[in-house]
Length: 490
Ligand SMILES: *[C@@H]1O[C@H](CO)[C@@H](O)[C@H](O)[C@H]1NC(C)=O
Ligand SMILES: *[C@@H]1O[C@H](CO)[C@@H](O)[C@H](O)[C@H]1NC(C)=O
Image 1 (cartoon, rainbow, N blue to C red):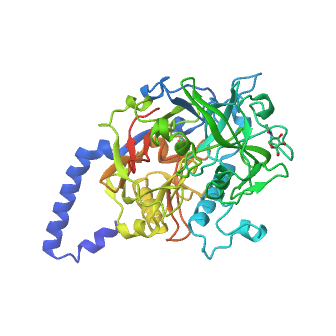
Image 2: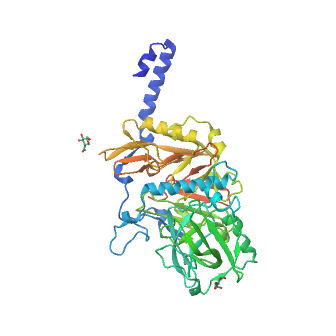
Image 3: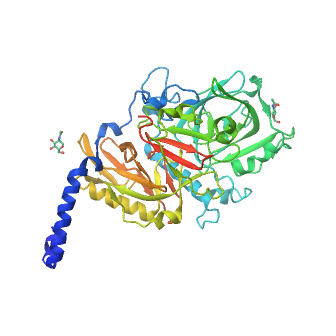
């Protein structure tokens, strides 16, 4: 209606061009309509109460492939109750809490990458004995894998995290404090292959880069690790080695890990954390002889399905051949253990957002398995939000929810049509997001765009785990590249 008035002033040539443009767009829309919108069943956004393991080929039982489960979903042993199979809701924290923790994690990533940031850092203010770079490790992620530790091996469900390095688990006798976990707490005195690392060993000094803190030392000369997280969660204990069993055929003696004696924080009922970062103490580095610093995973579209983590190139990853996975080179890691990538552009509904590449270049970006909601530079997020709103204008807007501010009320609709979102990474790699990576349900009738803007144009962008759902994400760390394939799991 607004254009009606304007057209009166248009010179005739402009009118003709406008008419042609309109005609072209009409044709374009007509032929591309199916690829620019997803039809989404609202019910698919709601958490399910029953576990339905993924049937995608990539998740079938293969050598060096572990099942990946959502920490709060019905497939998780952490939420299973012996008296019932449908007690998920009670065990899962509200979304608002998950998003608050997510923001803590993002702030700790940002401050780790910008040690001289003007922003106040609560951790540093309160713990002045910790050097500036330290301690700003990351809050817990959302996906779990089960590994075996010790001899005889004990099964432990750990959070897997590409944003950190050190593996740790709570250990008996829990000299100071252990939180409640679902698996029995690891008891080193019952493992024939366990031993402490001494303070004088070279391995002890590796903790400085892996945790951001210098190691401590007990009276008996046992090396002590300490790792703390942006949200005040922490684990402190003995640095140790024991046999790590990934699968019956993949057993790693003398695997270095933290045997936690004082553990507090947001780790749910998990037994601890497994780091997949670039540092020398990560699983990736400690198993590099066998797996060649190559791993891939797929995060399922819903918390009621399962995904997989595959270690090594010639193992389970064969489900997706190299022709279906396309790669982008890793960007420089800036001395950190994060996995940096270059975002070139983003399209909503097939239309590229009108933002210069410099917006992405200024901030840089990482891919992270533990951040839930992707973070974009403020200019990119606001362009995405307005393009998305524009293409969703047939639906009623809803108020912001926590960090999410592009929200809709779908009332009693059972299905909606949402614009596609695709990312282009350097090397001309286009990645189309699964619908489950575009909208997140905040109630039975309302859903929000599953992205948030950073506070500062210089804050690093983060390609988070909601946006990675169903994609086979391939980390060829030795080859310096990151791959994506569609349909890695469902
Ligand atoms: C490991 O070191 C701690 C602290 O020094 C000690 O209490 C524990 O007995 C040691 N464990 C083994 C198996 O040596
Ligand atoms: C949905 O709600 C509207 C009013 O809120 C009502 O008119 C319509 O009949 C409802 N549709 C269904 C399928 O329940």
